Image (cartoon, rainbow, N blue to C red):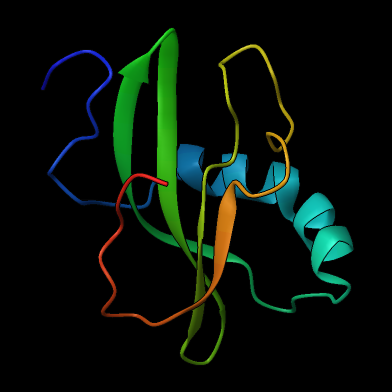
Length: 98
């Protein structure tokens, strides 16, 4: 994988990716104007930049998913500017750069 490119390999979620997702859950809920009983990292792809960006597929309930970039740079523990997640995704939809 080249620096800056998104990995083609989809990896199962880890405790680290779940922690990243949990850290921005409240912010996503605020932006969406609703709360999520389920907010579970399912799988991810990574992108090496000045650190690593993670593109994470998150299960929110039943068969509803969102794709999330939980942080922009390693030293930040907040959601990047609005637009760094995509809603209304389905389980079969592939994670890709956004």
